[in-house]
Length: 220
Length: 250
Image (cartoon, rainbow over all chains, first blue to last red; front, side):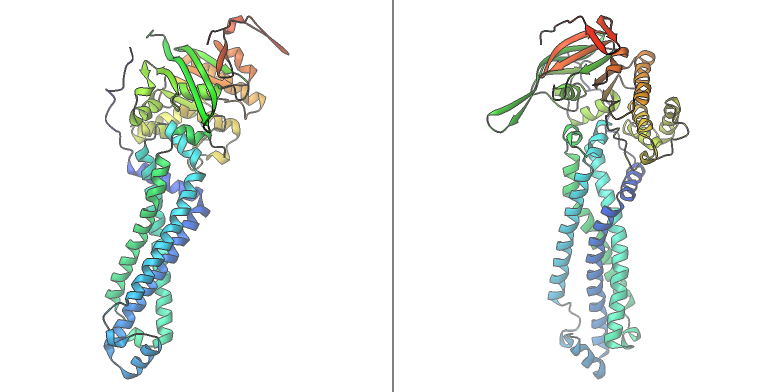
């Protein structure tokens, strides 16, 4: 008696440029919400970059083995006898910072899903599949992660250079470990993006699993 | 199933559990056949179940009991992908509060369902522009929703609803947020979709002006069909409405 849709074509993939455009438009539209998420990434990555750059510079200065500089390093709390090793406390502190900021971003993204519930319902009524909604959130998070990570690492680098110059004077610029710093900044950059994407997994799936009726029933 | 019937609801019930003992019967056994190319208005007071029925026959909610066939397909048998495909290709939705995506222009809003249907961006753009010109928004296609009036936003919604040449257009209180003149324009637009394009238009409404263009009117009360009347049996007078009641056993 009833027909079926067994003959419908295979899944049609929505072109990535379309998803990127919709995501970007969404970020621009909810600029303040995006800024709150962005600040979380900026703070975390600025702190991680700062710690990594200061650690790089300190290790490089320890290797110079200049008495006057060693006194300055000891005054700054650097363990000159374990030069070449990254302080475990520093690593722990960075991990805690990343975790705290990830939870903050997750919270902000969940709020964003709640704010956009009607939009999700409308998209589903227009024929959007769950996959499209998930992609939308992942791309928004990645774009925010990239922007936040770039700003954060520039901020962290500048503060680290200013602070270390203030502490150790011209020694910093005499033996600046440029390649080591760049490598660490690259790590911080990826940490920022991963942090944003990971914290969007739960909100993205929560949004995609919403039934249109649940979404449309909500009054704005 | 009869070829002329595009939607068939059989004994549709929708119950909501409010705690352990309390059950709200939003729909309590609705049976109705809706013909292809028909303009059907669903009327009833708030809380009567018209929006619930509207959601059932639009494939955006599923019944607690009973069956809904849309274009010969039992909606309950569809998985999420098939449901998305059906919503994309078979049904166009028009909402009371327009639900135009605020981040996109009018043109992009109309293009979106075509993108979901797999149409190329070029072809989608061309068709979306043509539809927007048809609904009188040729000059406004690059405007965002906040730059458009309520009536214009609802016209974007109509353009978006017909973008994929659906079989059915579902309009939920399409004139509720519009002034009288704009509401009349909207009713004319929906009527022309029905009469000129042969699209089945189903509208949940409070607007008595809608009755004049409807082929049939379904009156819902307490989750049941109270009456199902042909337009011809209604005698619409200024300041009153007289009917030859045709009680329908629900």
